[in-house]
Image (cartoon, protein in one colour):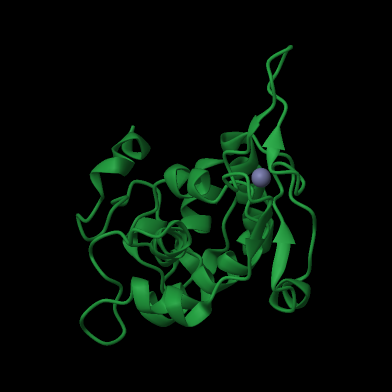
Length: 201
Ligand SMILES: [Zn+2]
């Protein structure tokens, strides 16, 4: 049986995110480049702060960056503070208000298997943010720490898309939550914010 590579699924997820949010493929920076760049241009408007709508309509303020044309390097400590639960080693049960903190919180729940429905709402919250690959890396690290895996969402969706998944995930030698399995629950803790209700359809 062909082993499914989670990196392949991650790349597929990124493409899907772009098709949902309608923005152009992001400029490709390595993680190190992202961490060393205090400010980067908005990927939606390319740093211009405005967008040309279709047709002859006047230019509009960019919806991704609110016209600023750029994004600042996310502050890791601030994000971790905003997503952590009251008990040590847990995530908060309510969704964080800040867009980037919400994205990391939601993607960590997805990768860790707490909620394997497609995180469409979270993708839309970070459209145009060039630091998304950095936020993705943080989400995966958080999922590993909190849930002990970062592959639950990928395995679940690999099955759904007709890929064959490594036997190790199915015979119990690699422990993943029931939400990673076809037919398993999609939300493990019943904690699904109302604003994400459309993701259950
Ligand atoms: Zn912009």
